[in-house]
Length: 312
Image (cartoon, rainbow, N blue to C red; front, side):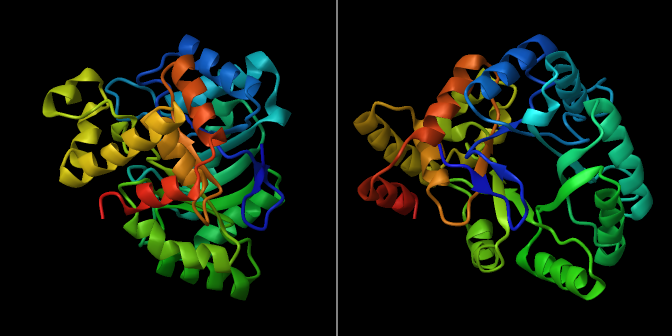
């Protein structure tokens, strides 16, 4: 299994990042431990979370996902063998990407995760009110203190990244080495516009919504299907002629390879230029095992062309 560098940093990971957004939402602590155990036993190491996961659940204390992952890290004693990704500025915390908000955010995340450093720390959402210089200087302080190894930018456009990189060059600060943006067989336009910049500047990319809120699993094919899961409402945006065309292509390739549509959708992502690894979450060990099969699946040129042209 090939390991992939994240930008020009020394951080290298396998072609699958486990999404932690479901921990504390559709996955409780006990099942979360089982999924995390199965993930590392399968030979993977990168786990993605955020200070805002899953704060949308009524009654949840802040950062439940980080808390569950932190308890698992302590229980297993394996901090040095895994890579923890987390994020600051979910868009709802005061201060955005200001220096004080970052200082407060990192300390809270470190406490919940029960660790003294973060492998990859993302700006979760852009903050138009805070200059890049202030944000990058705050990150530079954390990197020098050993609390953060590498920084990344989530949901940034190409102009935002270019401006941030220029600031890093002029001010001799650490740059964003990795991006995290939405990308899947349905949602392509934004990442396609960003890809040339990433490749030209050797910036890594871990992409989210890899399975389009579960739509690309084939689970949701009608309005009636949307009620099968608490996450079903997110798949409703894909339930249209284009989405069903993409499912048709996935079904065809999956049948030929004795795989599932989800596995084929992940294999397509892994094969795309500029993608370091997809992020995907699992609510059971069986689902996790399917994700692992997907990123290990190799698609031939005919299958890749069929999938890429689907829904066009």
